[in-house]
Image (tube, rainbow, N blue to C red; front, side, top):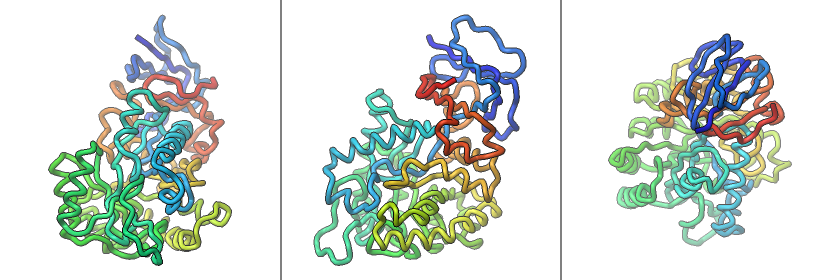
Length: 407
């Protein structure tokens, strides 16, 4: 039996309550056992951590990341790297993500259930994770990495997408992914930035194809998330029963109300556009990628403002690729400009746990949940940029085990 006692903390439990000074938290066998404030209880067998007034909070959750996207040119994933090399590179990205304070992630296309199981068995150092395997894409869609000039069949292997056209093909592809143990299905329902042969404001997949994908997911007790920028693609997905819309940069009020009517989540991913629009040339983004990133970035803050004002359920993801992978916490800063620091932090903890269906085990500091904890040297409600300074992450705990401890 192992026990940890965090004392003299400013507790930000991410339930929505205000911070509590002079607080303490007890964790036993990887779970939170008890919380309180004032006089610290005595536990003779507990390892004590004196937080010295620092902020104690739950581990962060990134609800849209891509561990397998380790290059700035996604076409290179297939042309230059064997799948085995991709696995090693993805494992390194996952380990670094944990050291950024993200103790749980939802991978939005690329890695398969083997990574999830490897983390559970302690074979890799990584956040807890949900995975969807390869994303479903139509020919010429967002996961079809061929250049318009390439007259070869679509690539079906690797760690990005599976190409399927028509109701029968998407149904078979969905069933195959579910057979492989994914936690949900991902569908490329509109154009994107990283794909060379489409534009972000387009619609991909028919209502019938979307309905078939959602049907197969629900039949297996799973959900569907979709990649969208255009309002038409968002509406089609919400009406088909998609659980969460990812990105949504061109969101307008009419579309926001359609999403709300159908109980659909929106997961804005602002950080990737911000950093790639500013540093794309430095990172060596392909010209088509850089051009589209700069365009969609112009709309991301307005889309979040509309979603927030219309009362949508909002999650949070970074969607970083390549050189942007170390900067996931930038997402909190960008959301805070619209939602305020507390709501931005709640999006990245409590709300993401609800989005992912794991509120019973993580997202807040409450008895019975995983002891996934951060000790932050400062007040994130006064400056959310603090999460981007790894030196300010004094302690990172996952399941009651120290990942980092500098106090």
